[in-house]
Image 1 (cartoon, rainbow, N blue to C red):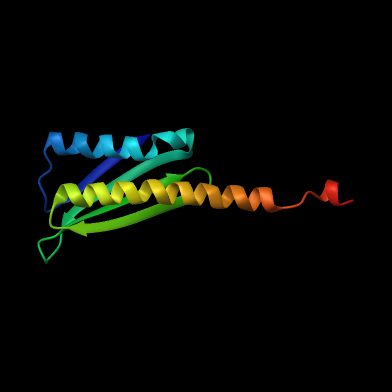
Image 2: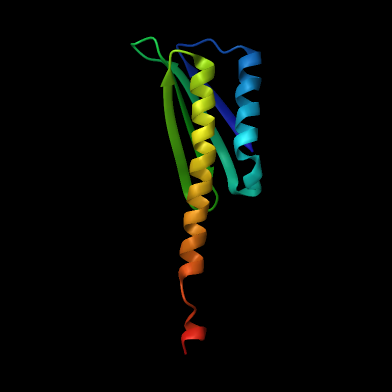
Length: 109
């Protein structure tokens, strides 16, 4: 699991970075090798809210992304990491159901 953290108009302490990585590992570690590159972008918007955008590679199907904003940086990170874990699980379940739902040509004959 490779995590790339980018900040825009925001100072990121090492403690905050380790907190973010710990939350991501907790949310995504159960998916193992399906998790590819993770990109996290933290920025401050005009309303003094912190935006946390997480984009994750879902091997071999593509990318999933979430975005959360809050005045509290930790709350934005918590909500975004929770959502990305749930979304990742839903996407894997959706692809699994699509593959299992197909009837084999050999069985139909």
